Structures are given as structure tokens and as C-alpha cells.
Image 1 (cartoon, one colour):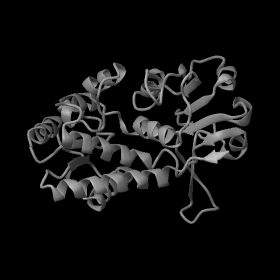
Image 2 (cartoon, rainbow, N blue to C red):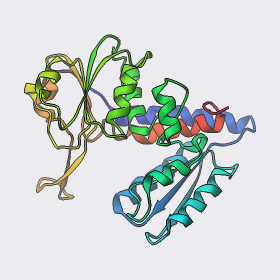
Image 3 (spheres, rainbow, N blue to C red):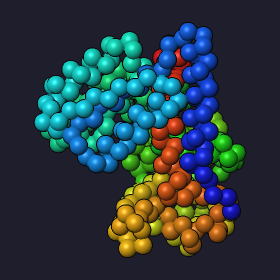
Length: 293
């Protein structure tokens, strides 16, 4: 059984990007620039965006952070998006979700120019992904693909069961794992809350991607010997055994599932750290015009 180290892999990718940025600077090229918009003061979002800005500085990217109170109007936010769309310094930008209830997430996402949508949420980029065209794949699915590739996990001809059908993880993963590429070429079963024979399907799976957001849902009796298990879930629960008073759990009951696996991702330290690496890879692509010529 091999535990997939997402933290180490993310650091390796960041180091690779940093070397490329050094080469860009040495040749007098344009330094990649990532911008972020943060609305309100949600603690989790604050931490997440701050880590992105810090990592940009570490690898040599330019970065900008635009903060707004949760009273900002939808019209005002759309104006800012238009400004970033037309700013030649900014190669890509993200808008930290969720947004306040009076602002439409979908309207905001659709306002972002596809060539600067490094989160990969714009319908144009989702469509390009489905057609296996060059695009920005959203951070979590892209991170999972990187882990499968860098650990040289065989996917061709395998049966992949995806648990959860969210637009952010489950649905795109089902498309990506079925595409004619590596990682890919799987026979994919996309399951969800209405799936009746989930245990039976999981027991047939060579690869399971658990992304439903339910702590320790996947148990040993649902996993066959030698399977690859990718745990996307993250649930914070109270714990009297940690200094913080909280413990992070994945969608997989790790201690009992891991011994049956060929490969498995832990929580924390698995898929999570790969999201920032994916975002940086997309921003580098944007700065080079690698997707939209």
C-alpha cells in the first residue's frame, strides 16, 4: 500500500514552476500574474486566499488581492471583473466562493473572460474540457490527474467509480477519467445519493474517487483488494485529542480502507494541497497563451 503524498507533490510542482519563472525573468519575459477577489470575511476563505497570495510570492508570480465587504452589490462586483478582464498585467484571476446570497455565483462566473478563468468554472472551459480540448481544468480535478500521473497509476481499461456528482469535482472527474488520454480511458460509473447499489458498484471498482462530503462514508466492505482510492472529502469535526479542538476527516474511513489499497490519499495531505498547485499551473498556461492563442 502506497500513501499518495499530495503535499510533497504540490511542492515539487511549485518548484518546477519557480524554475520556469526564473527563466522567464532572465529572458525579459512577462512574469505570470494571478489576481483574487475576496468578498466578505469568511475565515476559511481568508485563509485559503492568503495562502494563494503567499505561494505566488514564493514562486515568483505577481499577485493582487482585492477585498470587498459583503455589502458590495452584484453590479459593482461585475464592474471589477470587467476591469480585470481588460487588465493586461493580470493573466488570470479567481473569485473566492461562496459569495453573499444577493450575488449570483453563476452570473459572476460567466462574466469572467474564459482566457482568464484559471479556476476553470466558466461554461466555455467546462465545455472545452468535455471535448478534450486545451483548457483550464478546475483545481481539484486537475490536482487529482496530476497525482495519478506522477505516481504512474495505470488508468487505461480500469473501472473508475466516482462518488458524488458536484459540478466542482464529481461530474468533471467522470468526464476526465473517461476521455481518450492519460490519465483516462477508464470505464466510468458516476454515482450519487440516488444510486441504489453503491456498495456493489464500489466493489467492482479499480479506482474510487470519493467526493461526496460525508465523513468516513467509504468503508472497507466497499473496497476490493488492490484498489486505488482518492479521497476528496474534508469534514471538520470537534475533537478533544487535538490542540485546535478540531479534526479533519475525509470521505474514506482511512484506517480500515488503507490496508486493502494499492494507492490511497490521506486527509489532510492528499488532494487538498494540490489545488493551489493546479491553480498556479493554470495561471502559467494563461501567461503563455497556451490555451487561448
